[in-house]
Length: 349
Ligand SMILES: [Zn+2]
Image (spheres, rainbow, N blue to C red):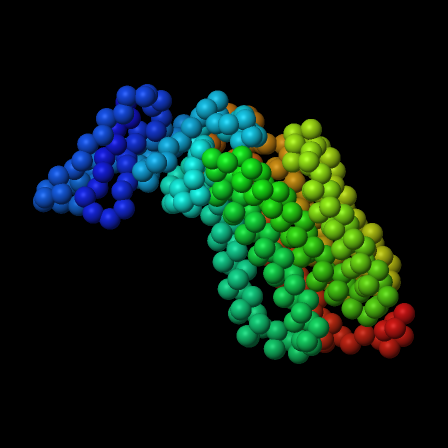
C-alpha cells in the first residue's frame, strides 16, 4: 500500500512507503485547521523505508512526485550495477532531480560526497590565496598554476555532482550528456593533478616542464575528441574507457622517474623528501580505481549496500582524498622551491 499525505502549508510533501510496489494509491488532505502539534503530525505521517542489512528501517521524507525504484524497474540506460538492487530515482523532470538532492536514495552519498568536496576546495582555495600563498613568497606564475589545479579539482567534482543528480532525468539524452560530462570531469581532475605536479617537479628545468605539460594536454584533448564518438559511452566501450584512463594516469610514471633521475636518484634529499608524497598519491589512485571497477563490496552483499557503503561511494571519497593529498603536496613543494632556489646550471636547459 502506498499512502500519500499532503501538508497544509509550504511545499507539498508525500510520505510514501516506498518499498511497496502497489498501484492502489490512497491520498488524502490533512485538515489545515487541525491544531495537532507539529511533532505529533510528523509522527503520524512519517513512514519507514527498509534499507536492508543492518540498517533496518529509517524514516524518509520524500517530495511529491518522487519515488524510488528497484533495479528491474528503471530504464535500461540507468542499469549499471546489478548489485545495487533498490533506491533508484528515475523518470524525473529537472526540477524534481534538483529536489531529490534532499531525499535518501542510492545516489545521496554520491552527490553529497562530491558537493561537500567541492565546497572544501572552494573555501580552501580562498583561504590559501589570502593567507597561505603570500607567506611562501609565491610568484604570479605560482598563483596561476595553483589556481588551475584547484579549478580543475572543483570542476571535476561539480561535473560528478551534476551527473549523479541528473542521471535520473526522464530524458535519456539529458542523462547521457551528464554522463559524458562526468567522464570528461575525471580527465579534468587528472589534468589538475598533472599541472601543479609537473610544474613544481620541473621548476628548474623549463624544457622538460614544457614537454610534459604539452604531452599531458595533448593526451587529454585526444580523450575529449574520443568522447565525441557515438559509442564512447556504450557498455562495449567500458573496457576501452578504463584503458584510456589508466594510460593517461599511468603516463605519470615517466615524468616521475625522469624527475628522480634529474635530481640525483633515490638517495638525493629532494627525492627522499617528496617521493613518499608521490607514492601516497599512486596508492590512493590505485585503491580508488580498484573499487571503481571491481564493484566490491556490494558484489558480495547484493542489495545490502544500496544506500551506504557501495564501491562508487568509496571511489568518490577516495577521489576527494586524493585531490586533497596532491593539493597539500603541491603546497609543500612550492614552499621547498622558494626556500631552495634553482641552481643556475639547470634553469635554461
Ligand atoms: Zn561518480
